[in-house]
Image (tube, rainbow, N blue to C red; front, side):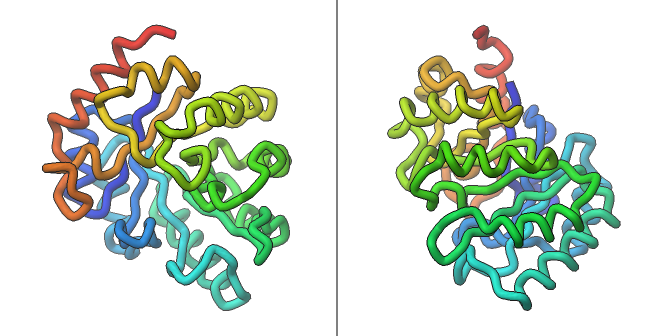
Amino acid sequence: MILEVNATTLTDAVLAEQGGANRIELITGFAEGGLTPSQGLIEEVVGSVHIPVQVMIRPHSQSITYNEADIRTMLADIRVVKKAGARGIVMAALTDANQIDIDTTKRLLTEAEGLDVTFHRAFDEVDNQIEALQILSRFPQIRRVLTSGGTAPAPQAMPHIRRLVEASRHCRMEILAGHGLAREGLEPFIEHTGVREVHFGSAVRQNGKSTAPVDIERVAAIQQILTSYHE
């Protein structure tokens, strides 16, 4: 089982690692769903932790449909990530019809050659997620999809997440479940969905607030559940 924790500061990243997180999703703009962090933050986090760092590539929160100027910005940010030595990126692009933007995805992945790629929760805006998963499976660089199984919190979509997990295993991708997960109810969630990777944000922060620092004890408590869990 893999525990991914999102970090918005260097302190967050260090605390997450100390608590037992297996991977960091590095972002800024938590309240906006995650935006690309600064070059300085990327370099400092990559140089300070020993677990994999996945950096958000999302230039703004206006939409998840990108124009040429946005794409050029994303390509430049990917180059920064590669130079900094991060393990991978978190990215996504949809069309105006909320379908996978195949052309933009290809361009971003070409620039991201050699990086581990997560397709982020823009996936939850797509109507036919099984079909979208099959499209994403054409790109071997995309190792996982972060999803709550729709726009509602993940615990409300367990049957659908189970279907995604089953479909993903044929596609050689992982379903990274996130949004609305908590320590309470985590074991039945894993049992019902079969996920092998989980993503935590507010639930591992002090008082459960997105603006608060990561809480080592909360991270450790979740990792203890994952470590002791037997499929």
